[in-house]
Length: 170
Image (cartoon, rainbow, N blue to C red; front, side, top):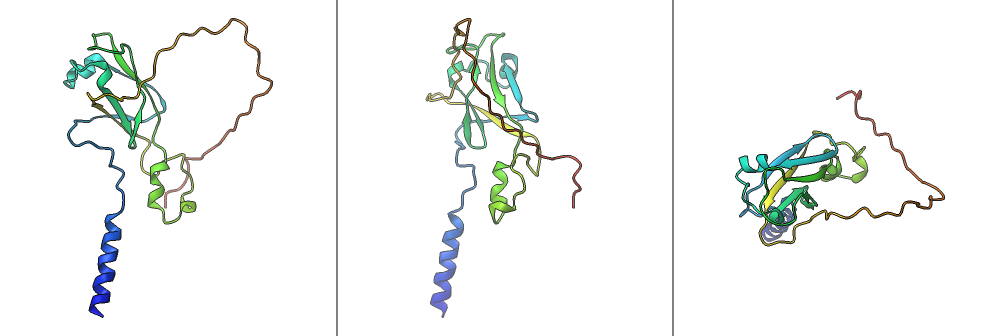
């Protein structure tokens, strides 16, 4: 009886160690700078802000931006070299949604809406320096469209209304 109990406890303990914490993307040898975003839109990190954080001499190609364990593509005014006082980093920041909250529910259908987070609207973006390369970028492209474009024959759009305010908190 004791052997069966010991084996079952050992199995349950090993099963508990196999869970993910969603922080596997973090490299603990790097320093991360946190930027909070409360609304969806285009955000800019300018060179004076980078200098005040001690990143004024970091080449533009070494910056990396993370959110929810995924690398976010960024746009830099220069592709290589150190920023001047007029240079900046831009990225598309989206407010916090409920997609990371699905692990809090026993069944996925229990989550009423994944468009809004039950905790906060503010999302955290983490800027770091990665000198090894392979950093995601939005490349500048020339706008060389012809003057007369043919119109599309139709347009399909799906609209959603996800209620957030005015609901009682129980």
